[in-house]
Length: 211
Image (cartoon, rainbow, N blue to C red):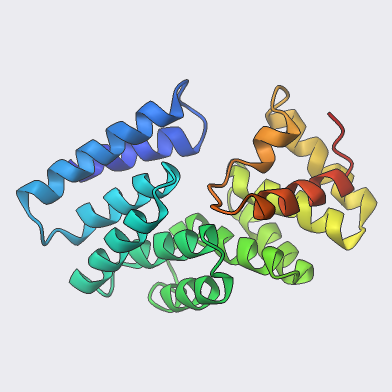
């Protein structure tokens, strides 16, 4: 069940599903079945947390992520989803600490590209645009298909006033997703506070995005 939950989640995350919400609900259900069979399945709790977060059930996601970590403190993916959840509710300093600690658990893990955008998001929302740009550039370099890296790269460059680079980053977003609106792209990350979405959109406007 956990493997099916992961497959469904990434189908929604990477834009491969026509109805992302339905796919996320399916991911949550597969993960729920895993922990129904074994409530001490840390990976099952992690998958529940991951789906719940993107369904914008922030508090439930945090509880499930903490449960996964309590069961298996070495489960780095659970630390990562907790970091994302903390970003979502505006606890950016704690998110930085959580994800940084998780990276120490897997210094040679090639899947870190899935968690380090949480660091870029936290830096960006704290106004540390240079640091946000540095991490986003790393994400794009590791996986050119991960939208979150492109979003943070363009927005941070916009905030830094690096107009030519920002325009190039924006052009790459629109090449990959020519039909997406600025508002939809800005609001893709499930922040609880709309002001955090507005800050992302502000960076994209400064990068030159005009709808």
